[in-house]
Structures are given as C-alpha cells and as structure tokens.
Image (cartoon, rainbow, N blue to C red; front, side, top):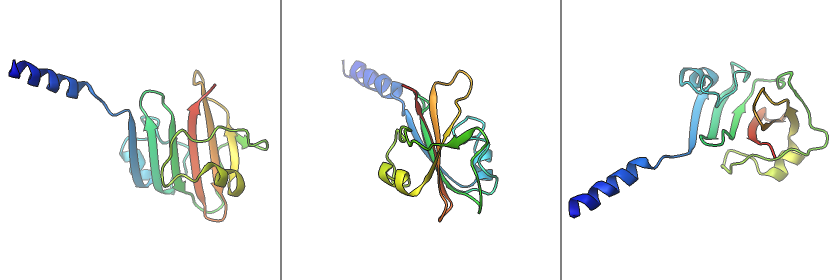
Length: 142
C-alpha cells in the first residue's frame, strides 16, 4: 500500500507543469540565441541593440509582457499606431520591472499594434522617452 501511495504521489507531481515562465536577457542577441524570438516570446522587431530584456509569458494563454531598454530615438514597428484614447488593456502580469497601469497612462507614450493573423490578442507597446524604457505586452482579446 505504501508503494502505491508513493507511486501515485510521484505521478501527480510529474503531471504538474509551470504555466507562467519568467526570463531575462542582457541583450537582444542573447534573447535570439536563447530561442525566445523563435518561440515568439520576444518579438523579432525589437531593436538589435536593446538591453536588459525582462520577459514573462503564459504557456496556456500566450499572454506575455516584455520590458527592455531601447536605443536612443527608437520608434515602435509600423504596425503599431498611437493609442490616443488610451483604451488598451494593461499587462496580464504584475512584475517589479513592469510599471503600474497609472504610470503607463501618465508617463509612457502608448501604441496599439495591429493583431497578427489568427491571433485574438491585444498587443501594446509603451515607450518612456526620457529613459528609453519600453514595455510590450499581449493580452487575450475580449
């Protein structure tokens, strides 16, 4: 009986997976070499000289958030347009490296990005011009 209980405990523990994964990269080239771009957690349009990348993603929902330091005078990709109404949903995650929603609205320039094909996600980029801090996140569409 004891062996059966131990076997069941091992089986249950091995079937548990971590759905939310956090990663960090010193540079964009490190993110590329680490496979984060290929797997889609770090967008390929991030500038090649981006530094201090922090990333979190949910394996089940594909929601993600990313922060990095951009080079001087960097603009988001062409498929992202200024969000003048600021009606974007905020990131699905809370991390120390993610600014709180009220700071995103007050201090960052926010852009809504056109969704990709067959991807029901809201994608947003926010740039703090004085520090070159950039936040990118994807959340499920309503």
